[in-house]
Length: 66
Image 1 (tube, rainbow, N blue to C red):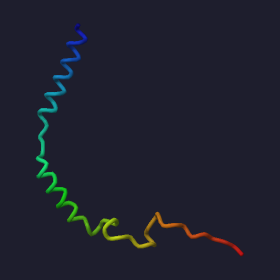
Image 2 (image 1 turned 180 degrees about the horizontal axis):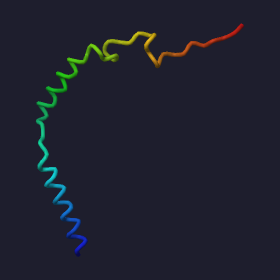
Image 3 (image 1 turned 60 degrees about the vertical axis):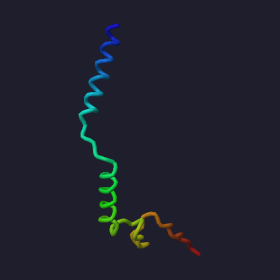
Image 4 (image 1 turned 90 degrees about the horizontal axis):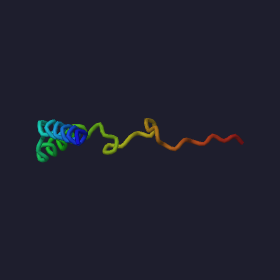
């Protein structure tokens, strides 16, 4: 019975901790994310592309000797 009480106290302590966390509204988080994406769009290689000389994932050229 005492182990059950200890477990319940841990749960209550965790719930109190979680209740005290400051939360951000979803609309505010979405607006912040959109602003961040717009500010950093120029440096995003998925949006602007990458030159083949800087691309580490380009197919390697095959070297063959005749």
